[in-house]
Length: 154
Image (cartoon, rainbow, N blue to C red; front, side, top):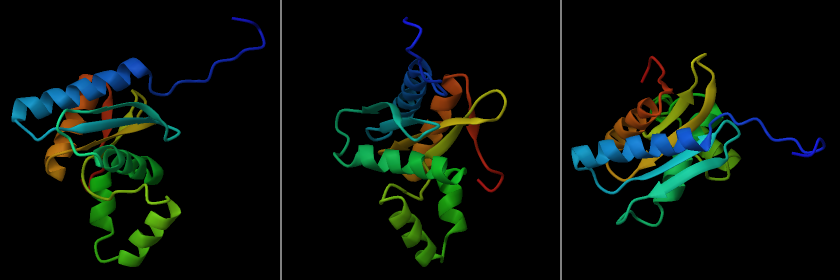
């Protein structure tokens, strides 16, 4: 590589993102869940990898990304975001506006932590119930050898 070309630091490598997706899908198939869509974001909120299983609705990518993006943006899982903001519709509307509508405050968005408990990204899963989506996100993160960022309130 020429000396004037520098690569960016990767917080969540593609191989790990693919392992998260495969682990999440495997859990979904094992449990007989509806077709899943899984989006993995790096620490900057950019998509590292995404898969939409056959039969998943056309809006599922945006929903999965919104779950992950909200978790990454606020530093807590999307389950906690929704729970903490029950009855705070004005605040949720403000978050939706501030994020250009990219925030989905229901379970299925989970932070991805490294071995030092630093957030290196987030995963969002959608396709079945929100609880099932979150279960698959957790399984995917663990399958990749990483840790889920689950808040005590979750």
